[in-house]
Length: 130
Image 1 (cartoon, rainbow, N blue to C red):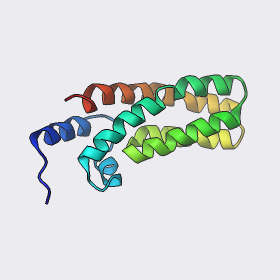
Image 2 (cartoon, helix red, strand yellow):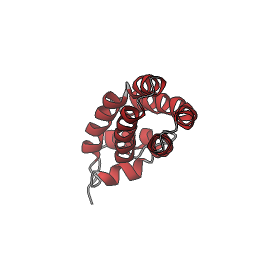
Image 3 (tube, rainbow, N blue to C red):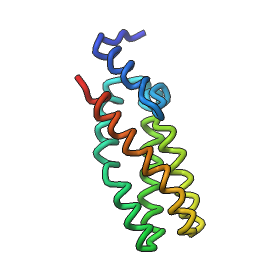
Image 4 (spheres, rainbow, N blue to C red):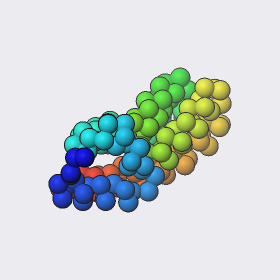
């Protein structure tokens, strides 16, 4: 078995402590390669940083199809890194948007708007630390 250096152990401990992140699941998706996972996380952070602003604007404008595209990408990206809570909340919003229910979409956006910034901040603070 591969032995991770101490920095790998520290990173694993930090990631395992992040609420809403299933580190083991995310690591499994990159075939257990911690360096690869470490490269994927900043891409997730940067790629999803503006999603809430976009979703809020698109839903407010009634562009539910546009919002569905954004949340579908968020849902997939969250699943790929093991962000289980964000994935679940994005799936609920995606479902409301697929049913073209703007009111349900607005309601489903609320918990996602609370959870996603918390996850992104935690990842920035803990996953990107040396």
